[in-house]
Image (cartoon, rainbow, N blue to C red):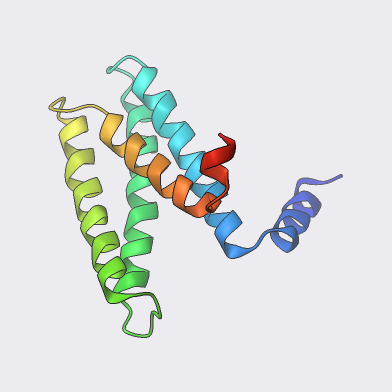
Length: 122
């Protein structure tokens, strides 16, 4: 089976929430890996941080859209988290902090995306 056929099948089988969960999982795995590499491995660290920052930036952009039907309070919280992710990513690259907070935030979002019964099953 070709890669494109797999992508097409995966897209058809997933709802948007599952797609977001999968994307957060991929980004979070990249952050976890980047947290374990030597700080001199700048490309690995930057790639993971940039991917995460772009994900959160896209979410914030969507939340800033006045046509977004999500609760305004939740939208504001997502935008706030996006700003934190950006600042914290810069601090990591300066060697002033570690990846833990970013990984924890993403894991919490994944728990929310997985639904109410998933926390009990884990």
